[in-house]
Image (cartoon, rainbow, N blue to C red; front, side, top):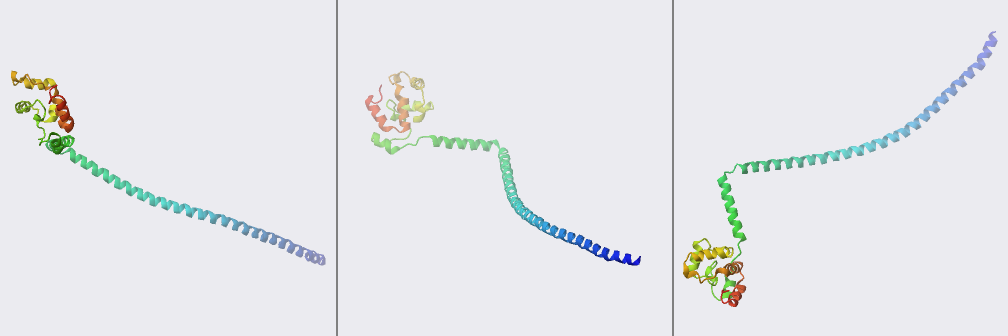
Amino acid sequence: MNFENMNIWCWLIPALVGIICGILGYLLGKGSAKVIDNSAEINSLTASNTKLKAELTDLNNLKASNSKLKADLDACNQKVIAASKAVTAASKTPSTNLGASAASFAAGAATTSALAFDGSAAKAAFGKNIKQDDLKLVEGIGPKIEGMFKDHGIKTWKELSEASLEACQKILDTGGTRYKIHDPASWPMQAKMCYEGKWAELVKWQQEHKHGKL
């Protein structure tokens, strides 16, 4: 009985050892396979980490750009605030000062828009010195008629050029019957030539029309 038991253990123990070795070998092989799989996973994670670092760098760059844009926006807001304050201050300026500024501007505009008088060109055309806005340069107007027109507010070539024939005739009528022989029909036209500096044309016209007589 004891002998049989010993025989059983003799073949059972090696069998158990073999089984255990087989199990250990399987486990060791499986463990090795897991190490290889982990290596591939590590490579994947490394690539993901590199990508995340690149994205982080981009985010940092965006943050820097955002800071610059914010600074520009703040500067722009400061300019808007300053401009608003300037407008508010201007709106509080006394009306008398504004009126003076407007009058000064209007005077400057009128001076700029006026045609410049070229005395040398006028002298070359007429052969004598010509005074600006001398109404007597218009054929048919003498010293007394010039005085009458100036008394009625027509003191320059431009003003005479813009006067109507009826207005000119009314001024003449104020002088009495002795001025009925004068015909002012061409006076505004001649004055316009004077104002525009068309001296050669004026001289030619006066010569062709018997010195202003239509």
